[in-house]
Length: 182
Ligand code: SF4
Ligand code: SF4
Image 1: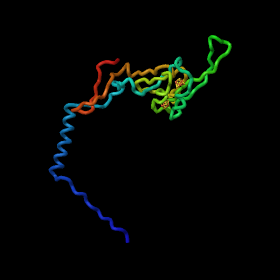
Image 2: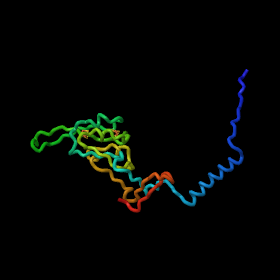
Image 3: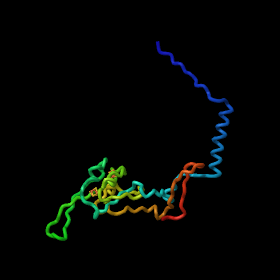
């Protein structure tokens, strides 16, 4: 014999009056934000988020500071950073080129954890405070030793207004748009 299914109805909280009151409250919130909009939506690229200086954004490499220890590539949890070997001429011994190794990054894999920047003993890597770079192809996301040393171009800075989000005790999260770019 099939089991009998018993349907229990949940007790309604409050009556009709409470339902109408909740709907009026919801409508009042809608009217309030229609009259006095406090919109949070970022109008990108007319506005862009201005991150704080210690934000973990795109990474730039300073070759002159690098001692080729490979700590950055070893600690990378997503295998985004790899060492490449290059031949360099020592001015003292121009006839004997030396093999050296330097890091390069693959932004298809990077999760912006910042481990590589933190572990570098000579501060040869640093974060930029932005992450909104568009690459035209996947191959472009694999930086070379040269492109890894250039700070990426960020066109939105020329076109948009810097914007921050701040917490206000009364209004909650508030968007603040600055009047002009840096
Ligand atoms: S930020 Fe993290 S994931 Fe990206 S290259 Fe550095 S260690 Fe690897
Ligand atoms: S951790 Fe720093 S010094 Fe060592 S290889 Fe990486 S960038 Fe160069």
